[in-house]
Image 1 (cartoon, rainbow, N blue to C red):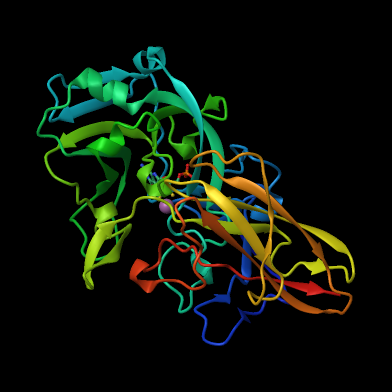
Image 2 (tube, rainbow, N blue to C red):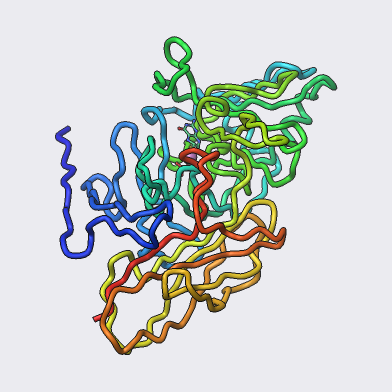
Length: 388
Ligand SMILES: Nc1nc2c(c(=O)[nH]1)N[C@H]1C(S)=C(S)[C@@H](COP(=O)(O)O)O[C@H]1N2
Ligand SMILES: [Mo]
């Protein structure tokens, strides 16, 4: 099929935008890619498909399935649920091979969970780093329905020697980042056993009340609320219990960062989400009428805690005012917030920013920590707007 991607280059204000001398950030998203196969999504990559939710189109708490961002490392597998099985093996007393129908008959629960790709907002990093050039929208929120993972693990009988639970997807391909294993590998991630037993960790088969769409992992995916998206393995067909912390490619070479232990850098798999907020409207480089009242809206989320406050700056971070959080916080789900901006009467360029604080006392930093490499980007992002 002919690739119909075309690139729209916007003019005026879309030149790289540098704010505050020395800060590790510039706005460098000069291309906005559209593709007829995915109306309303920003296409960051095709084959594998990596699609961004256009955050300025935020229209509520739940992201529609067609708008939910897609992050896939390999080609999307086509799976017939009738001959698909979920294998549970390794350190268990009763290895399992469950059919789709059997899973649907098990007790289920539904919960909301916001997924953010650990590489979200990467386009804001200077110098430019490797990886998909996500802007604001590698984050979305849905209601997931499925079987609590703990029920399946209990049914399999986890051995006392088990430490980690490994989840493998049906998708496979060759990876690039050195060091690379030979040949094709499957996407796979591990979870510490205690985390895997949390009642919130689901083997999900429904997303917003519909069967999981193919691009989001049909027929079954893991959902790990509060963790960056890479933990929520799609096209799941194997769960394997092992006697040590898993150190697969996607949590050692890739999706890992450097933590300092007494000052010594140690490689650690990426896990819980950092506290973060984003401005949905105005959009970057939006033109706003002088002297008007503008309702700034956005989202904020965090892992392992609740968002407790969001503040907004309309002067590039010099001063901050509180925003209103809408509704009660729900653990591991984003909160919508708004702020009434009295737009200045004088024309000019203004840089808006938002900053969230969570109930564990963490606050968004004002610059990126490069021990995190090209991941976990939660510093306060600049949204330049033109007042005229
Ligand atoms: N099998 C498999 N699972 C996967 C991935 C993948 O490439 N293959 N990508 C992961 C990453 S990095 C993210 S951010 C989320 C994205 O989920 P989504 O595409 O439903 O938004 O899926 C995760 N699960
Ligand atoms: Mo991701």
